[in-house]
Amino acid sequence: MTDEKYPIGKYTAPLSFTEEEMQKWIAEIAALPGQMRQAVVGLNYKQFDTPYRLGGWTIRQVIHHVADSHSNSLTRFKLALTEDNPAIKPYQEADWALLPDYKMPVAPSFQMIEGIHYRWVELMQALNDEQWSRTFFHPQTQKSVTLKAALGLYAWHGLHHLGHIKLALGKADKN
Image (cartoon, helix red, strand yellow):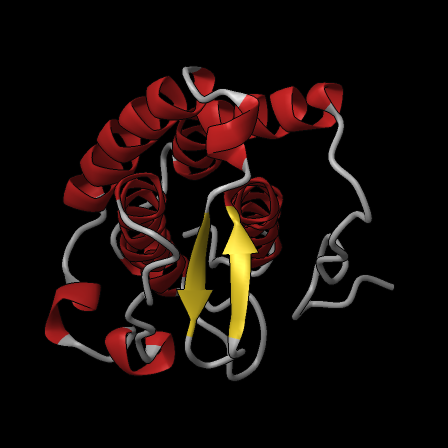
């Protein structure tokens, strides 16, 4: 039985980061926009409001969340590359999912995801070992996070939410 909250399992950070693993994660981030778009082709407006689990976000909310979350991640990468261990600004993602723009059609968020991922992948492909070791400080966890670690987390994050979309598709009213 699938854990609906964590359809691909909880994220476990690796103890070390190999070049092969990092390239796989970059490829997963590059592929995510197309995979998400393909997953929802043909859905009507009402079907986007299907939650992936009882009390969970709808397909629409998941797509808007990925746009917001991954735009924040790109910003965090740029801050870490241009400042010394900058403190990032956490946000209340559950509260953002209740804002009015999370009820709008998903097309603008898909445009954001595609653009953000294109730029993010281009940036990541150009980083050297020293840059991958740069950090940002997360005030909620009180920890510095390397860009390597953020890469792994966000590759998982995208696939995690793609898993949510696929779960919701199995529950969407086919009418």
